[in-house]
Image (cartoon, rainbow, N blue to C red; front, side, top):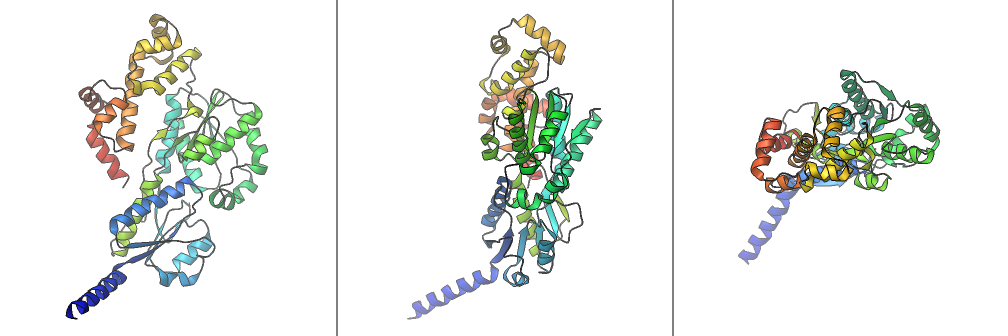
Length: 411
C-alpha cells in the first residue's frame, strides 16, 4: 500500500514538474518554401536539445487573435505584415522575428546576412570573368533590396556596372500572397516585363536573382524566348531549394543562406530572452556556400574552349585530375593550352586545378561535418598532409580552426 502511494505521488510530482517547466513556443512560419522549412528544422534542433520546449505550429489566419497571448511563453515568427506585428506585440511575450524588413521592429530579429550574400554572388561572377552583370529581384522586398545593394556595391568596387530589373507595381503589391504564402511559380502578368528585361540586357551577362523562385522564372522566360542559359545569360539564385533548383532546366546554381542556422540561432536567442538575459536587437547569421549547377557552368573567355577547360576542372577536381587530363579533354597540346591560359587568365592549368581543389576543400570544411580524411580525397588532394599544408597556407588557419570559426559564426 505504501509502495503504491509512493508511486502515485512520484507520478503526480513528475507530471506537475513537467507542467511547470515546459515552455510552450508558438511558431508562425510559412511552410511552402524550402527556406522556411529549413528555419523550422533549426528551431526543432534547439528544442530537442532543450528537452523542455513544446512547439506548436500556428497558421497565419487563425493566429491573428489576441487570445493567443495566454497560451504560449514565447514566439518565433515571420511578421510579414503589420497585422501580425500588432498581434504579437500585444502579447507582451518574448518574440523573435525572422522576417527581413527596412522599418523598425518591436521584436528581436534574427536574420540572414544580405551583405555577405550579395558579395558572394558578385565574387562568383567575377571569378567567372564576366564583364556584364544584372540583378533580377523583387523590388520593395527588404531582403531582395539589401542583397541587390550589396551586389551592386561589390561590383562598383571592381568598376563594374549592373542592369537592375524594375519590378512592376502590380507585382510588388502581390509579393506577400503570391511569393511568400503561395510560392507561385509562374510569373503571370509579370512575364512581359521579364521578357523585355531579357531582350534589353547585353549578352553574355551574369544575372544574380534574389531567390531561387526568381531564378526559375527567369530561366523559364529565357527558354521561351530562345535565350540560352548559361552561354548567353548565367543565372545564380539564393536559398538552394534543391527541388526547385534541380526541377529547372538547366539546374540552378544557388547560394545557401543557412536558413537552418538562422532557425537554430533564433531558438537559442529566445531561450536567453525567456531566461531574462539581454540579447542584441538584430542578429545576422552568415550564409553557407554557393552550390554550383548548370546555370553558371561557363566562363566568359576566349577562345571558348578555355571556358570548357575551366568547367571541366571545376566538375572533376574531386577525381584528382592533372593537367594532362585537361589537355586530353580539350584535345589540344599542352603548349597550346598553357599559352591560352597565360593569355586569358595570366595563370596555368596546374594553378587553376590547385585553386579549384582549395575552393572545394574549403566548401567541405565549412559546410559539412565530414572528417578531414574524407575531405582531402573529395577535393582531389593526394594526401591528408598535402591537403592540410596547402589549406593552411591558403586560408591562414588550419582546417580545424576554419571549421570551428564557421560553426561559431553560424550558431
